[in-house]
Amino acid sequence: MPLTFRKSFRILPVVRLNINKHSWSITTGGRNGPRHTRSSTGRRTTSMDSPGPFGWRRTTTSRHR
Image 1 (cartoon, rainbow, N blue to C red):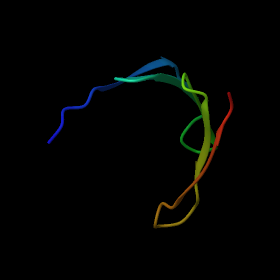
Image 2: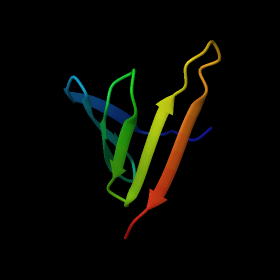
Image 3: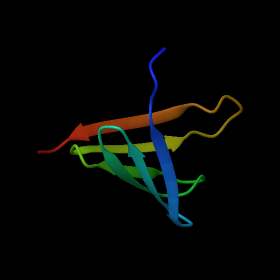
């Protein structure tokens, strides 16, 4: 089983800095709305939890260089 490194810091109530072994990212948004993530590798992700008892998650990812 490989070892991984991942750390997340809360900067503001709706802004989070995520750091892992290969890159870092900034996530904005709260629990009740859409979350937007921009990574140092160029990946942009938008995700939102849909209402209901099953907690489905919709994620759209695009890569800009």
